[in-house]
Length: 516
Image (tube, rainbow, N blue to C red; front, side, top):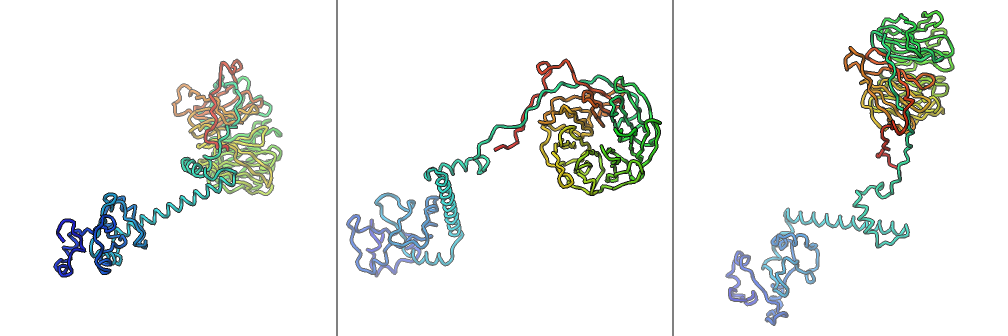
């Protein structure tokens, strides 16, 4: 068997017992193809059975460890005579086939105890089959979609490619429309024209008389001062509170003024005698907010006891206690129709109350920080709520005791604690921050058209720049802000300004609004 081109069939049966198993596995035995080059035919049927090439086994795949061999692995149950040898096992075209004697026994033994390589090959085959099946399903679905829309099924592959390229989002396949966000109208810029000094502490609250002749301010120096609106001169100073005066309200149907403070007291002042005529007892801690009902003789107050208390103005009796907040009630507004009372709390919620039933109708949980300011629009049935995260607009409905639906946020974040909020009839919104910033907004679009930072009073620290409250007068042409530097600042519109000489801040419509 060691001669040149001598096949295994030339070895006589007498000499076969001389070869050990090691010699058989070590020495490659090559068998000629009788039909290819005219070699001799097998001697008998036993010789044919002994040296006929068997089906390819995994042992051969393990012997030829190449990527082409692994990818071209054939199924285990393939028929033996018609199976082609992998390309890696064929050295060249027309070359003789190679095999190892005893391959069948070794392969059968190998099948009984499969190795890790065989398991890996099976896993690769299963993965390829599953991927091919998934591609087939997607192609069939794309073709069906194209046919259902009157297209060509042959274009399904292109549709699938485009679908896969756009990160498989349905929104990417739908054409985007142009932004329909309302453009803000031009507003005259506001300028500071008067600074009033007189208080000895932080000025915490302000309210304008319904006759538009004077306004009142409450301060941390425990006094209430009455100022002339036209000249800014001090008219009167009222004392009676023993702590900061945090809320003021002047009735437009009675000659009364109401005040509240951190001393847990709520007082009713008779403006004809300038004296306190009623006290409303019941709060367990400091009172932060106060509001009057526009038609009923009731008064709403809220504070650190997390409750909004409704008082009968004449009898001084607590009519009801609107409880439900988990933290301080920081602001209260009231209107004629349902919801008649709205409260904002430091627990980051806004509650709308059904005053007839005495219970909460709707709870708005859109804010992430405490709500410190609320403002009703004088004409529209909507309101604004201000928090450290953003200023939000809500539209109201009077069904079911009162409800509200979120409209949109203001387009720019003030990035400070917003303590003051006011809206004029000209759709101008002003918000005052804890850092002394005063921003002016367009109500319809939510665009900030002016940003200002008032300077502190001489002798004050820079950290005392903070706006605590703001309000427009009855005409909407003058703005009053009260601040932490113990001053009262008055603002008005610049009448000489025009859109060409004083353009507003550039308007950029929101890009994250998806309109399809």
